[in-house]
Length: 212
Image (cartoon, rainbow, N blue to C red; front, side, top):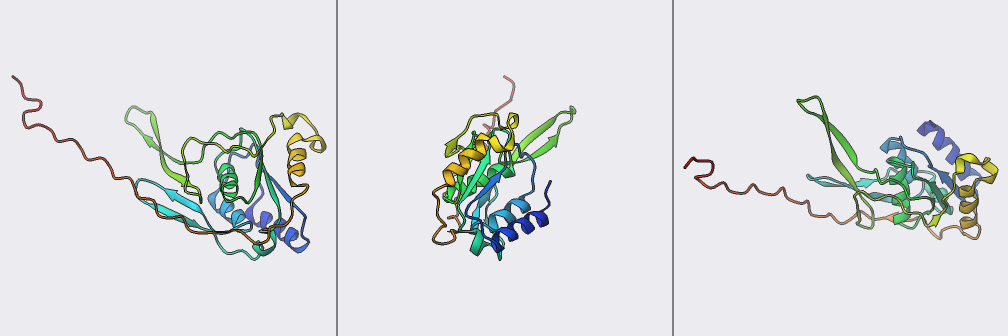
């Protein structure tokens, strides 16, 4: 996998010698780290990337400052996804699609965007619980939803040479007439959503469980 330093080095080259458009391919990407996703987002938009929500709080995701965003933040962008894109790849595509920053090309993803925690049980089995979910900058909370492409391409890209890749071809076609953004998209912090209270336990009658 490409380390974040390598990614930044490549993107810095694009900023120094600007490209007309950029295609990011996250097809079959099912591993990643939030820090890498936030680092990449910080080169493409400013402000926030939505928020993380749980039963306890809603925490805005503030993007770090980037010296590259003034250039890269205005370059037309497409992102390739498929049904094997999961986790951080989905979060990246969802956030950029929600703020109108990228055109998403490919097939719908699985919708595995929530953080999970494994709880071992006494019988040796494991209970997996979702602990943190993603709330997009437009206010939508993502639950069991995948990325729905703006341009659908349902073809097996692994069976063709890169030069004949239907996903890349569709992305380039979508970007063919695109022009630089007039300004970098600045995403404001989302309005704090109320945290849903834990339901109170029902009162137990005084004679419950007593024998007759």
